[in-house]
Image 1 (cartoon, one colour):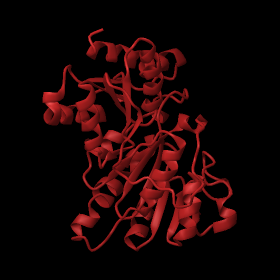
Image 2 (tube, helix red, strand yellow):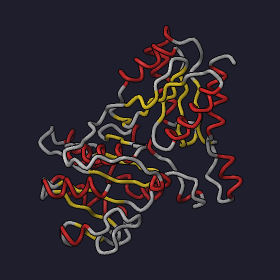
Image 3 (cartoon, helix red, strand yellow):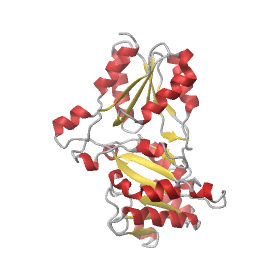
Image 4 (cartoon, helix red, strand yellow):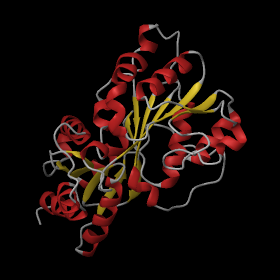
Length: 317
Protein backbone atom coordinates (compact mmCIF):
# COMPACT_ATOMS: atom_id res chain seq x y z
CA UNK A 1 0.00 0.00 0.00
CA UNK A 2 2.79 2.41 0.90
CA UNK A 3 4.58 1.68 -2.38
CA UNK A 4 1.39 2.23 -4.36
CA UNK A 5 0.72 5.56 -2.62
CA UNK A 6 4.31 6.76 -3.02
CA UNK A 7 4.46 5.80 -6.71
CA UNK A 8 1.22 7.58 -7.57
CA UNK A 9 1.99 10.63 -5.41
CA UNK A 10 5.31 11.06 -7.21
CA UNK A 11 3.79 10.82 -10.66
CA UNK A 12 0.70 12.95 -9.95
CA UNK A 13 0.78 16.00 -7.63
CA UNK A 14 -3.03 15.86 -7.36
CA UNK A 15 -2.90 12.60 -5.36
CA UNK A 16 -3.11 13.04 -1.59
CA UNK A 17 -4.12 11.06 1.49
CA UNK A 18 -6.69 12.25 4.01
CA UNK A 19 -7.67 10.61 7.29
CA UNK A 20 -7.07 10.29 11.00
CA UNK A 21 -3.36 10.28 11.96
CA UNK A 22 -2.15 9.64 8.41
CA UNK A 23 0.58 12.29 8.69
CA UNK A 24 3.38 12.23 11.24
CA UNK A 25 1.93 9.19 13.05
CA UNK A 26 1.87 7.19 9.81
CA UNK A 27 -1.68 5.91 9.93
CA UNK A 28 -3.44 3.52 12.29
CA UNK A 29 -1.88 0.55 10.45
CA UNK A 30 1.41 2.21 9.51
CA UNK A 31 0.45 2.46 5.85
CA UNK A 32 1.62 6.06 5.40
CA UNK A 33 4.63 5.81 7.72
CA UNK A 34 7.46 8.01 6.45
CA UNK A 35 5.54 9.48 3.52
CA UNK A 36 5.18 12.85 5.23
CA UNK A 37 8.95 13.30 5.06
CA UNK A 38 8.80 13.24 1.27
CA UNK A 39 5.41 14.76 0.55
CA UNK A 40 4.71 17.01 3.54
CA UNK A 41 1.55 17.68 5.57
CA UNK A 42 -0.26 19.27 2.61
CA UNK A 43 -0.53 15.86 0.95
CA UNK A 44 -0.97 13.77 4.11
CA UNK A 45 -3.87 15.57 5.72
CA UNK A 46 -4.66 14.74 9.34
CA UNK A 47 -8.34 15.21 10.16
CA UNK A 48 -10.58 15.32 13.21
CA UNK A 49 -12.27 12.08 14.23
CA UNK A 50 -15.10 12.50 11.74
CA UNK A 51 -15.65 10.02 8.95
CA UNK A 52 -18.29 12.24 7.29
CA UNK A 53 -15.73 15.06 7.16
CA UNK A 54 -13.01 12.80 5.74
CA UNK A 55 -15.16 11.37 2.96
CA UNK A 56 -17.03 14.62 2.34
CA UNK A 57 -13.77 16.51 1.91
CA UNK A 58 -12.55 13.80 -0.46
CA UNK A 59 -15.72 14.15 -2.56
CA UNK A 60 -15.22 17.91 -2.84
CA UNK A 61 -11.54 17.57 -3.67
CA UNK A 62 -12.29 14.98 -6.36
CA UNK A 63 -14.91 17.28 -7.90
CA UNK A 64 -12.25 20.00 -7.99
CA UNK A 65 -9.87 17.77 -9.99
CA UNK A 66 -7.72 16.18 -7.30
CA UNK A 67 -7.33 12.46 -6.56
CA UNK A 68 -7.83 11.89 -2.84
CA UNK A 69 -7.30 8.63 -0.98
CA UNK A 70 -9.50 8.68 2.12
CA UNK A 71 -8.39 6.32 4.88
CA UNK A 72 -10.95 5.03 7.37
CA UNK A 73 -9.65 3.38 10.51
CA UNK A 74 -12.31 0.62 10.41
CA UNK A 75 -14.90 -0.17 7.76
CA UNK A 76 -17.46 -0.38 10.56
CA UNK A 77 -17.43 3.43 10.80
CA UNK A 78 -18.48 3.80 7.19
CA UNK A 79 -22.14 3.96 8.12
CA UNK A 80 -21.66 7.60 9.03
CA UNK A 81 -20.55 8.35 5.46
CA UNK A 82 -23.46 6.81 3.59
CA UNK A 83 -24.83 10.14 2.39
CA UNK A 84 -21.42 11.29 1.17
CA UNK A 85 -20.84 7.95 -0.59
CA UNK A 86 -24.25 6.65 -1.61
CA UNK A 87 -26.01 9.93 -2.43
CA UNK A 88 -23.10 12.11 -3.51
CA UNK A 89 -19.95 10.30 -4.69
CA UNK A 90 -21.85 7.51 -6.44
CA UNK A 91 -24.22 9.86 -8.29
CA UNK A 92 -22.45 13.16 -8.97
CA UNK A 93 -20.94 12.17 -12.31
CA UNK A 94 -24.38 10.98 -13.47
CA UNK A 95 -26.26 13.96 -12.05
CA UNK A 96 -23.86 16.37 -13.77
CA UNK A 97 -24.18 14.63 -17.11
CA UNK A 98 -20.57 13.49 -17.09
CA UNK A 99 -19.18 17.00 -16.78
CA UNK A 100 -17.60 16.20 -13.39
CA UNK A 101 -15.45 13.18 -12.54
CA UNK A 102 -15.05 11.66 -9.08
CA UNK A 103 -11.51 10.16 -8.97
CA UNK A 104 -11.34 9.16 -5.31
CA UNK A 105 -10.51 6.04 -3.29
CA UNK A 106 -11.91 5.11 0.10
CA UNK A 107 -9.57 2.62 1.78
CA UNK A 108 -11.45 0.49 4.32
CA UNK A 109 -9.74 -2.06 6.59
CA UNK A 110 -12.32 -4.74 7.28
CA UNK A 111 -12.80 -8.28 8.49
CA UNK A 112 -12.88 -10.36 11.67
CA UNK A 113 -10.57 -12.77 13.47
CA UNK A 114 -8.77 -10.19 15.62
CA UNK A 115 -11.09 -10.43 18.65
CA UNK A 116 -12.30 -6.88 18.04
CA UNK A 117 -16.01 -7.64 18.58
CA UNK A 118 -19.08 -6.79 16.53
CA UNK A 119 -18.45 -3.09 15.90
CA UNK A 120 -14.89 -3.51 14.56
CA UNK A 121 -15.04 -6.79 12.62
CA UNK A 122 -17.50 -6.53 9.75
CA UNK A 123 -17.19 -7.22 6.03
CA UNK A 124 -19.52 -4.74 4.31
CA UNK A 125 -18.50 -4.90 0.66
CA UNK A 126 -21.98 -6.02 -0.46
CA UNK A 127 -23.47 -2.67 0.66
CA UNK A 128 -21.42 -0.89 -1.97
CA UNK A 129 -21.73 -3.46 -4.74
CA UNK A 130 -25.45 -2.68 -4.41
CA UNK A 131 -24.81 1.05 -5.02
CA UNK A 132 -24.60 2.02 -8.71
CA UNK A 133 -21.76 4.44 -9.40
CA UNK A 134 -19.20 2.90 -7.04
CA UNK A 135 -16.47 0.43 -7.95
CA UNK A 136 -15.53 -2.22 -5.39
CA UNK A 137 -12.10 -3.82 -4.96
CA UNK A 138 -11.23 -6.59 -2.46
CA UNK A 139 -7.64 -7.84 -2.91
CA UNK A 140 -5.93 -10.74 -1.18
CA UNK A 141 -2.20 -11.15 -1.92
CA UNK A 142 0.36 -8.34 -1.39
CA UNK A 143 1.12 -7.82 -5.08
CA UNK A 144 -2.59 -7.53 -5.83
CA UNK A 145 -2.96 -4.91 -3.11
CA UNK A 146 -0.29 -2.75 -4.72
CA UNK A 147 -1.39 -3.20 -8.32
CA UNK A 148 -5.07 -2.69 -7.60
CA UNK A 149 -4.53 0.36 -5.39
CA UNK A 150 -2.58 2.05 -8.18
CA UNK A 151 -5.37 1.26 -10.63
CA UNK A 152 -7.97 2.54 -8.17
CA UNK A 153 -6.18 5.87 -7.69
CA UNK A 154 -5.87 6.36 -11.45
CA UNK A 155 -9.54 5.55 -12.06
CA UNK A 156 -11.90 8.46 -12.75
CA UNK A 157 -14.75 6.96 -10.68
CA UNK A 158 -15.03 6.49 -6.89
CA UNK A 159 -13.52 3.21 -5.75
CA UNK A 160 -14.21 1.41 -2.47
CA UNK A 161 -11.04 -0.48 -1.55
CA UNK A 162 -11.60 -3.15 1.12
CA UNK A 163 -8.59 -4.85 2.67
CA UNK A 164 -8.80 -7.41 5.45
CA UNK A 165 -6.86 -6.39 8.56
CA UNK A 166 -5.43 -9.87 9.00
CA UNK A 167 -3.78 -9.68 5.59
CA UNK A 168 -1.16 -7.31 7.00
CA UNK A 169 0.41 -10.47 8.45
CA UNK A 170 0.71 -12.08 5.02
CA UNK A 171 3.96 -11.93 3.10
CA UNK A 172 4.55 -12.28 -0.62
CA UNK A 173 6.50 -10.97 -3.56
CA UNK A 174 5.65 -7.42 -4.59
CA UNK A 175 7.06 -6.06 -7.88
CA UNK A 176 9.16 -2.93 -7.34
CA UNK A 177 8.36 -1.63 -10.83
CA UNK A 178 6.64 1.76 -10.40
CA UNK A 179 4.56 0.96 -13.51
CA UNK A 180 3.21 -2.30 -12.03
CA UNK A 181 -0.58 -2.08 -12.13
CA UNK A 182 -3.49 -4.54 -12.14
CA UNK A 183 -6.49 -3.23 -14.07
CA UNK A 184 -9.82 -3.21 -12.27
CA UNK A 185 -12.28 -5.86 -13.37
CA UNK A 186 -9.83 -8.71 -13.94
CA UNK A 187 -9.99 -11.87 -11.86
CA UNK A 188 -7.04 -14.26 -11.60
CA UNK A 189 -6.90 -18.05 -11.60
CA UNK A 190 -4.49 -18.61 -8.73
CA UNK A 191 -4.63 -22.42 -8.84
CA UNK A 192 -5.71 -24.54 -11.78
CA UNK A 193 -8.06 -27.48 -11.33
CA UNK A 194 -10.62 -29.59 -13.20
CA UNK A 195 -13.17 -30.77 -10.62
CA UNK A 196 -14.66 -27.66 -8.99
CA UNK A 197 -14.32 -23.87 -9.15
CA UNK A 198 -13.67 -22.06 -5.87
CA UNK A 199 -14.74 -18.46 -6.47
CA UNK A 200 -13.47 -16.10 -3.79
CA UNK A 201 -11.87 -12.81 -2.79
CA UNK A 202 -10.07 -11.18 0.14
CA UNK A 203 -9.48 -13.42 3.15
CA UNK A 204 -11.54 -16.17 1.53
CA UNK A 205 -8.73 -16.72 -0.97
CA UNK A 206 -6.46 -18.15 1.71
CA UNK A 207 -9.20 -20.47 2.97
CA UNK A 208 -9.66 -21.73 -0.57
CA UNK A 209 -5.96 -22.32 -1.12
CA UNK A 210 -5.75 -24.27 2.13
CA UNK A 211 -8.83 -26.28 1.23
CA UNK A 212 -7.55 -26.95 -2.29
CA UNK A 213 -4.37 -28.44 -0.85
CA UNK A 214 -6.35 -30.77 1.38
CA UNK A 215 -8.74 -31.72 -1.43
CA UNK A 216 -5.83 -32.55 -3.74
CA UNK A 217 -4.67 -35.16 -1.25
CA UNK A 218 -8.09 -36.77 -1.62
CA UNK A 219 -8.01 -36.70 -5.42
CA UNK A 220 -10.16 -33.60 -6.00
CA UNK A 221 -8.52 -30.86 -8.06
CA UNK A 222 -10.04 -27.49 -7.17
CA UNK A 223 -9.53 -24.40 -9.30
CA UNK A 224 -9.17 -21.22 -7.22
CA UNK A 225 -10.38 -18.00 -8.86
CA UNK A 226 -9.53 -14.80 -6.98
CA UNK A 227 -12.14 -12.26 -8.14
CA UNK A 228 -10.10 -9.27 -6.82
CA UNK A 229 -12.69 -6.78 -8.13
CA UNK A 230 -16.38 -7.27 -7.34
CA UNK A 231 -17.54 -4.34 -9.44
CA UNK A 232 -16.75 -4.39 -12.29
CA UNK A 233 -16.91 -8.19 -12.10
CA UNK A 234 -14.85 -10.37 -14.42
CA UNK A 235 -17.65 -12.74 -15.35
CA UNK A 236 -15.67 -14.04 -18.35
CA UNK A 237 -13.03 -15.62 -16.10
CA UNK A 238 -15.74 -17.02 -13.81
CA UNK A 239 -17.57 -18.51 -16.78
CA UNK A 240 -14.43 -20.06 -18.27
CA UNK A 241 -13.70 -21.79 -14.98
CA UNK A 242 -17.23 -23.07 -14.40
CA UNK A 243 -17.48 -24.34 -17.98
CA UNK A 244 -14.34 -26.37 -17.30
CA UNK A 245 -15.24 -27.81 -13.88
CA UNK A 246 -19.08 -27.86 -14.04
CA UNK A 247 -19.24 -27.04 -10.32
CA UNK A 248 -18.89 -23.88 -8.24
CA UNK A 249 -18.45 -23.02 -4.58
CA UNK A 250 -18.36 -19.35 -3.57
CA UNK A 251 -16.40 -18.39 -0.47
CA UNK A 252 -16.37 -15.10 1.46
CA UNK A 253 -16.06 -13.96 5.07
CA UNK A 254 -19.10 -11.67 5.03
CA UNK A 255 -22.25 -13.21 6.46
CA UNK A 256 -24.25 -15.50 4.20
CA UNK A 257 -27.57 -13.69 3.71
CA UNK A 258 -27.34 -10.87 1.19
CA UNK A 259 -23.60 -11.34 0.74
CA UNK A 260 -21.88 -10.94 -2.63
CA UNK A 261 -21.95 -14.71 -3.00
CA UNK A 262 -25.72 -14.57 -3.47
CA UNK A 263 -25.37 -12.19 -6.42
CA UNK A 264 -22.64 -14.28 -8.00
CA UNK A 265 -24.60 -17.50 -7.53
CA UNK A 266 -27.63 -15.90 -9.21
CA UNK A 267 -25.54 -14.81 -12.19
CA UNK A 268 -23.97 -18.26 -12.55
CA UNK A 269 -27.42 -19.85 -12.46
CA UNK A 270 -28.78 -17.41 -15.04
CA UNK A 271 -25.82 -17.46 -17.44
CA UNK A 272 -24.23 -20.90 -16.93
CA UNK A 273 -27.09 -23.18 -15.91
CA UNK A 274 -26.47 -25.66 -18.74
CA UNK A 275 -22.86 -26.08 -17.60
CA UNK A 276 -23.65 -27.00 -14.00
CA UNK A 277 -23.60 -30.59 -12.73
CA UNK A 278 -24.47 -29.56 -9.16
CA UNK A 279 -26.06 -26.65 -7.26
CA UNK A 280 -23.89 -23.61 -6.58
CA UNK A 281 -23.00 -23.56 -2.89
CA UNK A 282 -21.85 -20.69 -0.68
CA UNK A 283 -19.45 -20.77 2.28
CA UNK A 284 -19.68 -17.69 4.50
CA UNK A 285 -19.93 -16.43 8.05
CA UNK A 286 -23.05 -17.17 10.05
CA UNK A 287 -25.78 -14.53 10.18
CA UNK A 288 -24.92 -13.11 13.59
CA UNK A 289 -22.92 -10.10 14.83
CA UNK A 290 -19.26 -11.09 15.22
CA UNK A 291 -18.76 -12.26 18.85
CA UNK A 292 -15.95 -11.02 21.07
CA UNK A 293 -15.41 -14.45 22.62
CA UNK A 294 -12.54 -16.13 20.70
CA UNK A 295 -14.17 -19.61 20.57
CA UNK A 296 -17.48 -18.11 19.44
CA UNK A 297 -15.80 -15.88 16.83
CA UNK A 298 -13.98 -18.91 15.43
CA UNK A 299 -17.30 -20.79 15.32
CA UNK A 300 -19.04 -17.99 13.38
CA UNK A 301 -16.35 -17.45 10.73
CA UNK A 302 -15.92 -19.75 7.71
CA UNK A 303 -13.05 -22.22 7.81
CA UNK A 304 -11.12 -24.27 5.29
CA UNK A 305 -12.95 -27.38 6.56
CA UNK A 306 -16.24 -25.76 5.55
CA UNK A 307 -14.90 -25.23 2.04
CA UNK A 308 -13.76 -28.85 1.87
CA UNK A 309 -17.20 -30.07 2.96
CA UNK A 310 -18.98 -27.88 0.39
CA UNK A 311 -16.71 -29.17 -2.38
CA UNK A 312 -17.36 -32.77 -1.40
CA UNK A 313 -21.08 -32.03 -1.48
CA UNK A 314 -21.05 -30.67 -5.03
CA UNK A 315 -18.69 -33.43 -6.14
CA UNK A 316 -21.04 -36.04 -4.58
CA UNK A 317 -18.32 -37.50 -2.40
